[in-house]
Amino acid sequence: MKFGRTMVVVAAFALNLAACDQQQDQSEISDEDVQGTAEMTQAIEEMAPDQMALLQDKRVLDDFAKTLDSEKTTHIQRVISPGGIEAWLVEEHAVPLIAVEVGFSGGARRDPEGKEGLAYLMSGLLDEGAGDLDAEAFQTRLEDLSIRLSFDAGLDGFYGSLRMLKEKRDDGFDLLRLALTKPRFDAEPVERIRSQILVRLKRDMTSPRTIAQRTWFEEEFGDHVYARPVRGTPETLPGITADDLRGFLGRALARNNLKISVVGDISAEVLGPLLDQTFGALPAKAAPENIPQAHIPVEGRLIVVERSQPQSIVFFGGPGILLDDPDFFPAFVMNYILGGGGFSSRLMEEVREKRGLAYGVSTSFNPYDYAGVFFGSVATENERIAKSLSVIKEEIARMRDGGVTDKELQDAKTYLTGSFPLRFDSNARIANQLVGYQMTGRGIDYIDTRNDKIEAVTRDDIARVAARLLNPDDLTFVVVGEPKGLEPDILKNAP
Image (tube, rainbow, N blue to C red; front, side, top):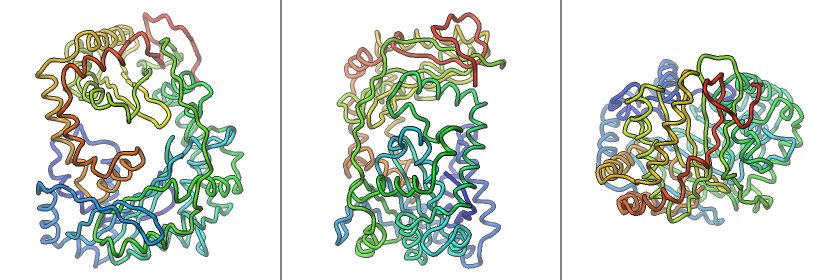
């Protein structure tokens, strides 16, 4: 989540230069990549002389590129502070930069009923004034120190990111401390950030993709907390007060639900005391949660949300698999072959390449903390949507009944294991991955064992998992548009 006036630190983007040079296909660059490139260009133009000297030091960048290209395994240290706070650390001294990621379990699922959007609103306000610094002073200090600090909220977690030069290390950790423990929630920034979110919500109300996904979540999760929108609604957001924000802060951000990863030019000896200084003032324990496992209906439905537009947007899903399930890795590999492998997947081959029915189609297994879900999406002309959905169901059934070939399995393993190191091509991406592993309960050795688990998957494993998890009749399809040739179980009007 990006609000306020924080300047992007270009030195942090220097870590991505080697990866940018290796980009093979422009079509594979995401919106975030495009945005990051634009931010990097702007920040280069605004750099101070000492920062520009760092970026132009070819020897430093070449040394770091060699580090990225080396085949050594990333060494993750478990650092325990004197006060008992744990962090995962990867020391990388080639470039004087530090990336910090923090996560608190809970996130938007902790929003009280009627206060949906509370966690998300708070994520936009923690860097808008803290301690003795009001919003303008806090943002100015971040810019003056070339420090990047941001927060975000998801269904299952609340996250913070910190990027800084080594020489600004103590300042960066102190600003993170202030943001997490002494946010101000002054009236002006609260209203400003609230207004920004309301504008986005208004835009989302006209987005077919957002309408489709939101409808699916509301219909399938019912009265479970996962049915509530992370960003809130135009009805709930105006009612959130500064007291609500302070109450959420005290309930949701604590040391016992905190995960930390640090990557960069810092040692374990230095990091330990900094952990206590930064996070020691947080409450010892977060408020307990009493959240049941979500029940996703297995009786599939077709829901059409009528909206006048030339294309229909489809979001579909059904019961999936949890991350700690022994069958997770076979399901992960199976999904790559079915719909998660881009142009390598069966669905892209059958729906796009052979029949030209849609530009793209994809599937994924999403393991939330309290629900495992199988998702998919497709978009095409209204006249082609019925045939597209028919082919998708046929391919899901074919996977369920026939499994995969030896070649499909080997190709999937080759890609999934070979592309894994690309997730660790910068300090920021390493830190982000590591905090994600902690938040989902994976061990500190996951980076070393993950590929072995993929290699161990057999055709029999996939056949078993496909029979267990794939049934096109269990899927609920939400179609937004004016589809031809479909008879919906539920017909709605677009908001």
